[in-house]
Image (cartoon, rainbow, N blue to C red):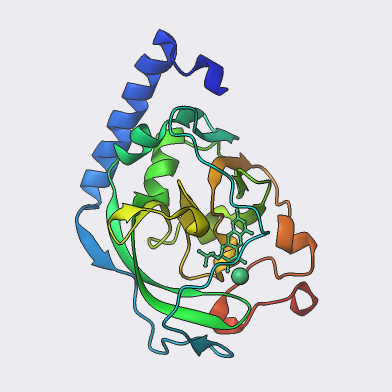
Length: 227
Ligand SMILES: Nc1nc2c(c(=O)[nH]1)N[C@H]1C(S)=C(S)[C@@H](COP(=O)(O)O)O[C@H]1N2
Ligand SMILES: [Mo]
């Protein structure tokens, strides 16, 4: 649904209905409070080194974020497309997630503390069509990255809006980014402004530039030549 219909009565009534259902499902899953990402026996993936820093990696553009006009649009092959304000996103049931972060350029950082809405709750909110199999994450500066719905249905995947309890700093992806700690970090867009559900796979920015389509760090799925 385009954001220009965001304020209509029709949108509000439908939105409240779908939101109530998503909240109810999150409660049924016991999805509140804080938890730690699903542990691995081998914590540092192969070929990675540990850093205490949190480097900044992007295309050199860190787009400004205007809280009055920002919308997170979730659309495509779904029954209930929505365009959420930052506050509407923060009003959905959220979790705090402590998770490790693995960049394909070989650095890993342990125990980042994010707050966000589980991707499963987003799925409940928009109700994807049965044909929806893949997702494209779109960012404010034009970056995009693709995932299968299966990859994003991992319980650690969140639409994050806070880091260490504070709004995400601009360089780390304000106002909203996807965190998918079981994949290399390029598979989560910073500066996220649209989640598009798709009926077939399409490749994102790095995926068309030679990076692997799936990006499992424990299998070192770095480059598409290895697919
Ligand atoms: N919008 C956007 N998201 C992005 C990127 C980007 O260039 N633009 N780079 C990706 C890559 S390669 C990594 S490693 C992480 C880096 O996140 P950080 O800068 O917070 O460390 O963001 C990912 N998400
Ligand atoms: Mo990266």
